[in-house]
Amino acid sequence: MRSSILLALSAAAILSGCGAGSPLKKMAPVQPLESYEGDYSDIIIDEEAAPQPALQLTKEGVTVRVQYWRKADLDRKFNRGSMRSPFSTEASWKQGVRVTVFHVSIHNGLDKPIRIKPISDINPAYMFIYDDLRLTKDHDPNIYYALPEEDNRKRLESKIGITIDVRNGVEAISRELLENRVVNNQIGPGETVEGWLPFQGIKFNLNKLWVSLSVETPPDSEIGRFKRVEFVFPYDFSREIHAAQPATVRY
Image (cartoon, rainbow, N blue to C red; front, side, top):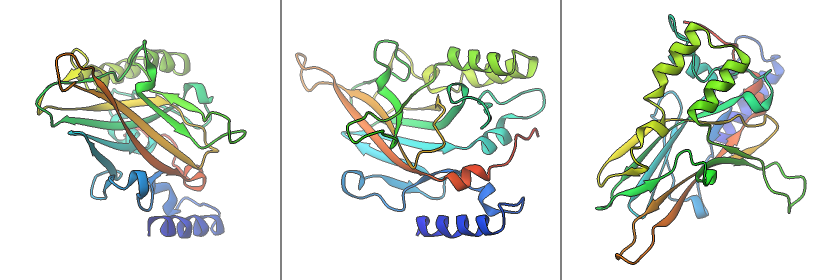
């Protein structure tokens, strides 16, 4: 049903010239699949989540929930008063300085702590996005890694400068970033950790993307080893909806 609606709206927007009244500008270019089947059949879509649907997956006692936030919704939340959005980005910026933002929560339903590395200098492949853009079938996809807080600050400094409103935004979001919510790289039994997780900006000519987040579950015995458990969430990307997104707004 979702894909049919998107196609209908895309066609209507194209016929109308994607004018200011286009319904596409109110939609997110990154959308959940119409349905999740096969390897992804356990993914639950929360259609009631706002401002965009959230995806949830439980594996081996751990539940991960992800929610995409488009630029317009981030502007509405953070571009207020003396604060500029710490996730400011423009389609005209080079791909290397744009960001793609998700809000993530991780619940540990086990009776032992789990380990998590949101931002790891040792192994950055614990949290990343990959897409369907391959030059050949054997070619690796594009990888967009999670963006550390310091790298995000440098990104803003290079494009905007560290003005008072930028500094206010960066300081306000710091305690809400997933990387700063996780204490000592672990989540205790029964605990839930949630926060913002920015990634390097995705390219705009892709059709599909996958968000991959990993945790490490504890061993069954004292001599066992922690096991990496990967959570993968597929999404569709609409170029038509992306092209119809509104310009930056301050509230």
